[in-house]
Image 1 (tube, rainbow, N blue to C red):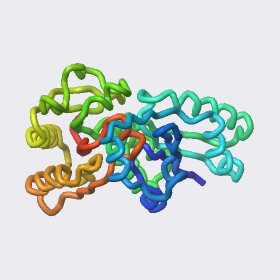
Image 2 (cartoon, helix red, strand yellow):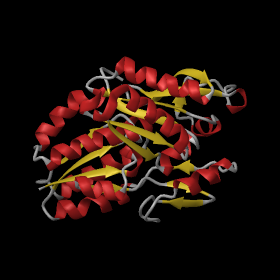
Image 3 (cartoon, one colour):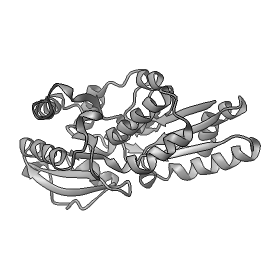
Length: 289
């Protein structure tokens, strides 16, 4: 039997993971000197409480999980005679996958008849979530692992993500985004517009003054790059900014009508540690990223 895995950096919740048949790997963050594992140390993510704490000046950190923790996730399923497909956030964004590779090599020696497959979504948060759900649909509909891997060869690069950040101190703290000038910031009302590259990295692609202009820029990219928009999910994410997310969602509905498969979700706390509160983004099926 094939067992699906994904991780909390994809924005998926335990309820959604169960719906699609995924086992969930928790990606940690540290806040107030304590390391927290989402959906292991708490059942429900209180996005407002988390981002309110960040608004007070708290700067969280994130870290890779250990080889041993990966083994603890995967080994029970190998032991029971299952193969694994892990659909994960961008390998280019974290050293955690070095530990995963080591864990898999150890497990392959112990269970040589078992197969381990992984799909790098080359994204994070909703870019990954869109792909995770598409693969979940295929899995539920009986697609083989070979069919899923073949689909991913071309389709992973056709899920675009564009978003804007409200306060650059979080990205400056994490160092995760290239192309952002250190002088850009909230006091000037400047919102950098960022996208996920085909290499799976975050890169600034421009800037707008004010949130309204930033939302309009996101809509521009959806209209300019979108392909088969209504045949796929369009997912809007926000870091405790429901009003801004609604503004973007309303524009999307006006543009694409009732056929639009629109979802709105919270940015998970681990990724949110890098982008900070009031970040808003959109993921959609595109001609290219």
